Image (cartoon, rainbow, N blue to C red; front, side, top):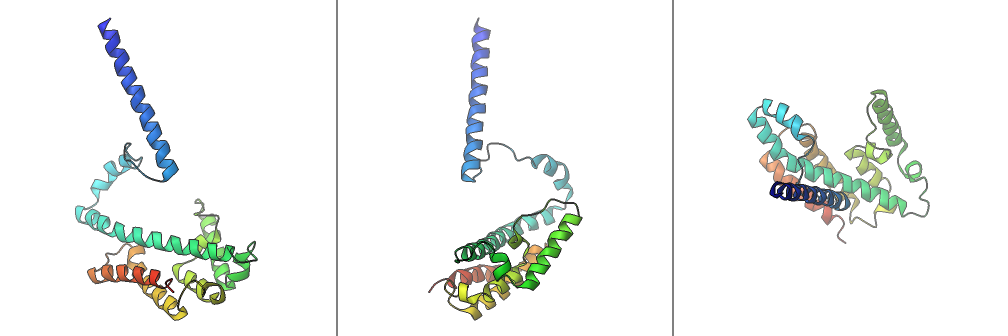
Length: 198
């Protein structure tokens, strides 16, 4: 009888833990946050292959990850700003064809086609996600009557975009970012946000 009680307590403990894990997973999805209560799916692959990479390269990759995260967040927020600004215009249904220069639209069409021909999943259904960082600058500056109310200077926007684009290259092409350039990245990100101070 005592063994049965112990078994029931163990079973209850296991079920309670499973319910808590499911609740935590639900909260993670809802709030886009990770509690870390479950190992990520990539752990198995990483534990098998990642150690085969040289330790110094893994350490360098970990240092560079924070710069990638900054740039990913910044570039994604700029895309969002562009889309939301156009969507706030009176004619919003076809802003891509109305406001984006034809050369950029043609480049994006070629990139989408190339991706589809490669047989891989499309990165997005949104054309704006296929624009380069430099093209985002052109979209903003070529529509200055729309974006001029957001930024305090067109020349400053061009200058900051040029600096960010130069800083983006080593990050995007897996090269270490020199110490001076790490500082420059932090300052240039600040400059970007200053552009919106009036």
